[in-house]
Image (cartoon, rainbow, N blue to C red; front, side, top):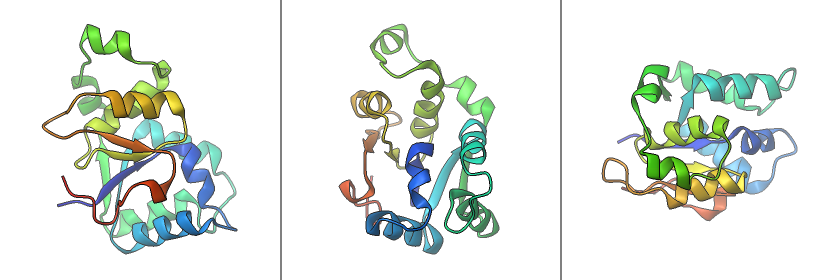
Length: 151
């Protein structure tokens, strides 16, 4: 089983030093045993917002997880193949760009995420089960037991 988690770009910005103890714990877990769920769109967002900021930045984490083969990459093809019903489309409140992130979460193994954006977080939490798993999003890492979360 993969201990995967989706981390929104607005959350990843909090990985820089000095670091909040809850974010520090999340970074340590990612370095030790976590798997990061990633799409090309999210990777571009990470790069845009972290230029010149190394230390504990998300780019450093991605480099380490790539080396350790603990990135869960969701392909553009997988994303395009996941289509929302018309009813689901009408119920979504997040902006069009964030719907790509919703698909990334739905295509991940555990379907858990840390997201600051309220509309995207609500859309994740209000989405029905996908592949038998209820997607869950929280605003801060301490709000979910990502280390021991089981399906």
